[in-house]
Amino acid sequence: MDAATLESRTAAHWDAEIVPQLTDYIRIPAKSPHFDPQWEAHGHIEKVVQQAAQWVRAQPVAGLAVEIVRLPGRTPVLLFEVPARGAHGDRTVLLYGHLDKQPEMTGWRADLGPWTPKYEDGKLYGRGGADDGYAVYASLAALGAMQAQGLPHARCVGLIETCEESGSHDLPAYLEHLRPRMGDVDFVVGLDSGCGDYQRLWMTTSLRGLAAGTLAVDVLDEGVHSGDASGVVPSSMRIARALLDRLEDAASGRILPAEFHAPIPDERIRQARVAAGILGDIVLSKYPFAGATRPMTSDPVEAMLNRAWRPALSVTGADGLPAIASAGNVLRPRTALKLSLRLPPTVDGARATAAMQRLLEADPPYGATVSFAPDQGATGWNAPATAAWLEAALDQASRAFYGKPAGAMGEGGTIPFMGMLGRTFPHAQFLITGVLGPQSNAHGPNEFLHVPYAKKLTACVASVLAAHASRS
View 1: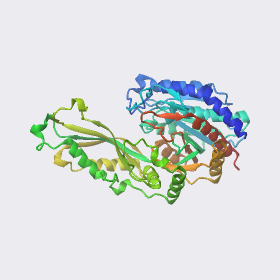
View 2: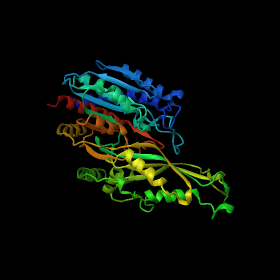
View 3: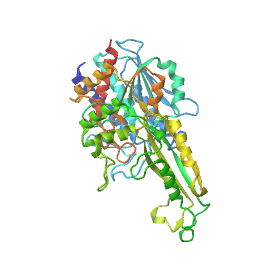
View 4: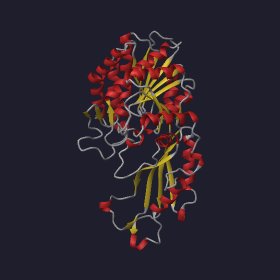
């Protein structure tokens, strides 16, 4: 492999084609079905799938075949196949990504916006470019660069879904439908994760699960004067707080029930120590703390274990609360909170969601009407032991294109697809990686794709694919 030529080719491909494609992609509000129930009528998901398919078809990759696969009532997937070149024909690599997006979110810089792409100082701002619209483009760019050098690669199958941000609820049906065409997958490359910094190749070793839904507390049929009712009618907000206290210690943030916890493997603790040693202050300083706000721990190792292996609760939305400017002296009839409980990678998501519902709905204070409506339950993923060939290939690629050894760490996000694939292909090795590094802010305001890092990551993927094909 001529590393310099490979890197220059992928970088040129990004500049000439991929950045313009992603710029157009960012403009399309292709929100995931969970956030846009009328996704089919609005046509945004269809538009990004067609855009990606058109680009893929034009790539100079020998033997490339591409199609949009549709199952009734489900979001479409983009499927591409590339036959093996110079490698064992019975080996198959699955390349994964998605094209659906999170919703807008407030707080964007005045000159930016979720659907307003801007390329500035090597960063492409806008929703979805880094999470992870780039995946299909980077995957084909890597294969094209390999073939230009005559490097071997196994048979490659690309699966790009459009409901990942909704928990990949359509994906099991597609996995079942497409399993005969996929063959025996022994290596999975997922470009939908993060990186600890922009200085090396990072491998994701685990992903947390998720139990999410809406907690609703109703105390009245209509709002009444707070001077008349307070002290007699219980506050729906206070009841909601009391219910959350069953789940979370408000002082520390620790999740209380043991069923939401899991032992942390010794290997993951060792990896967290190494990653914290590499990253240092970045582990904590990458977050935009307001004013004098302090993190929950000052220990980088504990912070990494907290975000990767310990459960944590976030309240991500609310109904029943008027804006302050229009909030009168009324005791509100209802409070509804959107809850997102991240779970350790080895905790079953469906069981945890059911346990969360039982915990919150049991014996409601004052006999109030309390309900918890689950909307997402996903099991996390813990990577299998890394094969010697893959460990060597990752480090070699990182040193070749970043000049530094590779890193490994657990991620706090949830990619249900990984758990599904782990069960479907139990003997496969996994390279789960991505471009979501410090301040990239996926799902939040000012999300960006670090283009120089993504260029090198594309070259790294090509290098690892060649190592996969060449191993004995």
